[in-house]
Amino acid sequence: MLFRSAPVVQISPQSAACIADTVGFIPVINSVPGLAAIGSYTWYIDNVPYLSGAAPVPAFSHVFSQQGVYTIKLMVATVNGCSATVYDTIKINPLPSVVAGPNEILCKGRSVSISAVSSTGVYQWNPSATLSCNTCSTPVASPTTTTLYIVTTVDTNGCSKQDDLLVTVIDSFNLTVSASD
Image 1 (cartoon, rainbow, N blue to C red):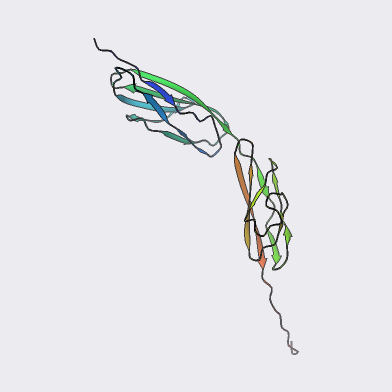
Image 2 (tube, helix red, strand yellow):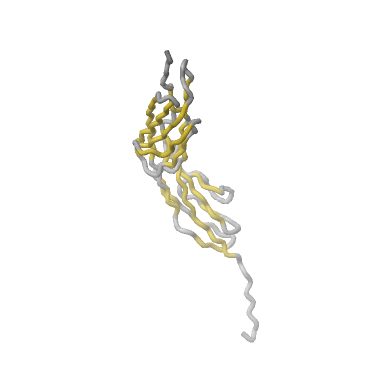
């Protein structure tokens, strides 16, 4: 009598991520007595097949573009037809918002107040060397050359978003006027 076993399958857990993150799902197939070789697999997101083929079962990654809760399903079958299905869910969190103020132009040796508005109230400005504060919403910028400032905000889920503004520095010049002008 031939004993046939269904595979014992799990998906390594990742319970949450952010929009635009690459999320990886790793299959775990446990060996059981009488288990025949894995012959085929299919990965699904919300019952839509995304990746299928013959063994071995690869890890699966996906970039989610919308927030929500998604069902991940992995179906695995042995070469003799025994199969198993495992389900997992993942929550995709929205990105916070951050908007840097308008680009600025200033003369060399001057300063300008720049600003950003964040949905989280968290600010991280870079580069920070020529700013009066790198964690406030309205630092004073004193660059000596044209500088692109990037502001990042992070929410409680660990999701982050960036925006930038350019401060263009105009170098001073000497103007000489002769008497005949």
